[in-house]
Length: 331
Image (cartoon, rainbow, N blue to C red; front, side, top):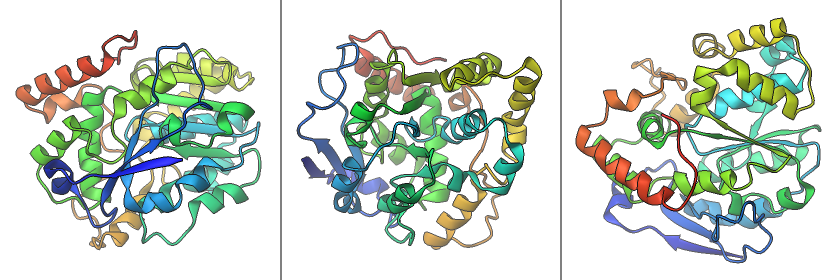
């Protein structure tokens, strides 16, 4: 069903971390059951994961999907948490009390997390299977590795895209503080250009979902439009879930989802995940740097951290991967 290719390149070795173990490319061999979408994608994206993922690949692929599921799918650091909280509240009649009482990690479970962090004791795949319906499920997996029933049962799927230049800077800090990466910025950024980092390549991942953006069970949004016009995104999200809210209710939700409120909301800002990962990576030092999972939330933050030379390389990389498509990342 799958081909697993160990990554042994210099770039892959330079960014390998004990928390995840050796990296591999995961390819789906038979893609005949994937959606054809608008016909622009001939081969669905593969994914860089870790060697431990092999033991769960078929289990995830064969997971039972229900029509009343809601799936949040993104590449890492592309507005996932933000989208999870938004969609959960829209779907649950703006129940802020319940959202405060139950952590987002339990309300919207990260399907493949246990496969990525072997030391993590909970089986998150089993946790998804046990969830009370209707389920909210989060995944960073590309189309080809997600449960095959997604394409026949057709539950609602929300995909959030983000400009790779901001993704890479955010992912670097994520790798350092959650995965325990101790290498250089330069090695990490170079590995991005060679598709050697966990969950890469990002752009084909996005293009696969862009190709099915017009399906009635798919909502495709951009991180940047959430930043610039959240009110319009909330209207689209409400319609997508067949919900109707007043302008005042949506304004209240927009405030709840603002970056300053979200970063201080311990039920949704993944403080628990940060603490868990720092323990699992042997860095249970109280987080003296004050790092937060929700760090800056800015558009264009890459300009503060990437050199002009690297930005030029990244621009070329993006242009090459978008060649022949009508998709463009927002700036």
